[in-house]
Each structure stands twice: as structure tokens, then as C-alpha cells.
Amino acid sequence: MLIYCEKNKTVLSENWEEHIKKIITDIENLLGVKMERTETNLLVKAHISLTNIPDQNLIKCWLFLYDNTGIHESYSKGEIITQNNQFVIKYDKEIPSTDQIKELL
Amino acid sequence: MSFNGDLNATDDGLELETKGQIHTYSTENTALNVGTDSYILSAASGETTGLEWVANTDAGLTLGAKGDIHTRSASDQAALAVGTNLKSLYANSAETTGLEWNTNARETLTAAGDILYASGANTLARLAKGSDTEVLTLASGVPSWAAAAGGGATVTTNEIHPTADFSTSSTSFVDATNYDTTIANETGGGFIASGIVGWYNTNNGSDNSSYKLVHGTTSQGITNVNNNFPKQGGTPISLPIEFMGSTDGNDLKIQAMVSMGTSTARGSGDFVHVSILEVA
Image 1 (cartoon, rainbow over the protein chains, first blue to last red):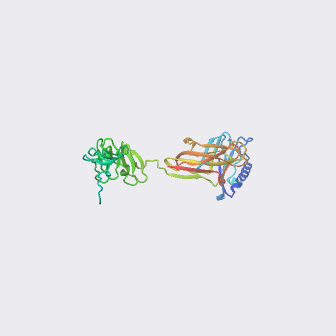
Image 2 (image 1 turned 120 degrees about the vertical axis):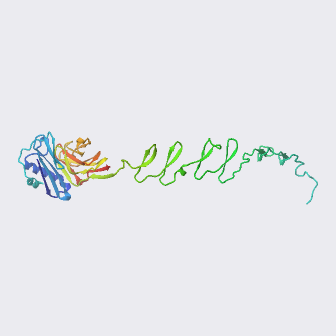
Image 3 (image 1 turned 90 degrees about the horizontal axis):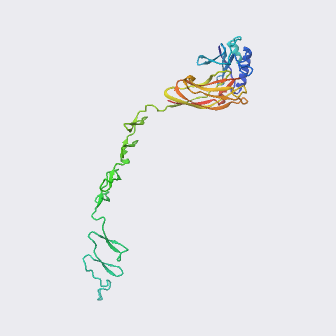
């Protein structure tokens, strides 16, 4: 499942690394799952991709909550792309609203 | 005027007795007999008198016209008349004098843009210039100008040089938004992409973050470039990339993934820059 949202916000490029850490932490807390795969979290239920365009004061967010175990989901040119992925398991938590995600960007 | 009565005061009594004799001197007054018909008198220090009769090798030859050249056949002196304008003198053993006037390159080339070629063995020929954009080709074994049937290059440049930052925690490759460009659809064309891409991730692993250049889909057989990056204190590592493919209207784009943590490319940091040269 894709949750896409945009937010008008200016984040300078040099501050982006710190900002995305905060976004990921906040959304992980909201979802109740870890999106970053680590040595103690080898299977993930979601991933996030973010684009920061400082010149347009814009942040774009693609949040994927996986519908099926072993099937990775992504977005390209208007289509959801699925591919097998051994690190993916089904997202089984409450689905947040787009506004909830947008608030955390 | 007076006369002292001595007839031999200066010639020491030498009398010239034969037709054609010449009064000369060796160590004394001497008569030099006349030479053979057509011979001429030549200085010769080895001779007693310092003179000798020698054959006149130019005997009978008259150069009667402007540009005549004094030459020789196998047996006689010969005058070779000058050739027509722009001819060159060539050796030709088949000619009486061994020489001939014949065509040269300067004569053959008559207009700007002319090209000199051989229409046969030892035969100069002129190829007049072609029209603009025509290319030199071969027709019936000789050069000619013809319309380009392909291969004329139209080069355009493009680049992936985003001003946006992109981050992902995806464990499979996903499109890096704004990190793409469209490669024009040109039959028979191609492109070359080169540049650097910097990427880093939030983990300290040695092979966590990966990117690749994708043109169309991998199933089209286009090679992807895939390099892994270590993280070094959050400093992006730039690696050179290069990519070649055909221009088929597909996007050339960068995809990224991370095996652990989050992968980030910072567009405004000027370390993601791919130049694309398209040849149609």
C-alpha cells in the first residue's frame, strides 16, 4: 500500500540528513514498526522514500506498507512496481491517515 | 710609320702554309692545323698550344621558338618544343627524346573544392566538390559525393543534475525522484552517460547503500552500473559512472536502495552529476 503526500516546508540541503532521521523516527513510532533494516531488525514491514526540494519549499513522501510477505512494493511513473524481496514481511498494524504522515514531515 | 727590315721580329719566321692553319704559340710560335669539319676550337690546357679542335655537339641545332628545350634523341640533338600551358615535363622512354609534356595535378584541379583522384593507373582525375552535407563515398570503384545515408551525427547533451535531495529506506531499488532524464527516441542512435554519483547511508556497514543507472528496464539487456558505498562519518563517497545504450525514448534514471539503514543523495551538494551525450 502506498501513502503519498506532500508538504510545503523548507529544509536546507545541509540539514536534510538530520531532518530525515527525525521523520523516520517519528513515523516508526506512529506505525509501531521499524522501517530501517538493521542487524537486530532483519525483516521490515514498510519503507519510506523522501524527496526534498528546497527551491520549491517542498517535501514529497512515498510511504509503503507492504501488503504481502516477500513482495516489495515501489512506485515508478504512475505504477506500483512489485518484486520479490526476502527482507519484506506483511504490514499488520493500523494504517495511518495521509494527514498523520504529512504532519510528521 | 717606319720599317726595320726584319720580317720575323715577332713570329720567329713562322709561315702558315696550309689552308686553315692558325698561328698560335706553345713554347714558340706554332701553326695549329685546321680541325675537322664542324669541329670547334676549344681551350685545352693539356695541349701543347693550349688549344684543340673538338666535335661541336650542338652542331646544327637551332632553338627556334620561345620555350624550346635543347635535348637529344638516341643519335641527334633535338629541340623539344614547350608544352601547352600547365603541362609538366615527364620522363617517357617511349618518346624519341625520352621526354613528354603531360597532364599534371595543377592542370587537373580547376575549381575550388576539387579533389584529385586516379581514374586509372597513372591517370589523374578531378572530383568536383559536392553539395553541403553530402559525404564522400565510392561508386563504381571511384570516389563520389552522395547524400549521407546515416551516420551523420546530431549530438545533444543532457544531464542529471538535480537540486533535490533524495532518501530511501527501501531494501529494493526504487526510483530516485528527480534523478532522471529522458533519452530521445532516435532510430539507430545511442548515448553515453558519464559522471559521478555520491551516496551515503545512516549505517556504518561496508556495503549498505547501492545505486544504479537504469535505462528502460533491465530486461532490455542494458547493463546497469551498481556500486556499493561505505559510510564514512556521513560523508558522501563519489564514484565515477559510465553507461552506454541506445536511444529508445526511455528514461535514464538513477535508482537507489539500502540493505540496512537509510540511503541519501544530496542533489544540491553538487555530487550527483551525470552528463549524457546523445548521438542520433
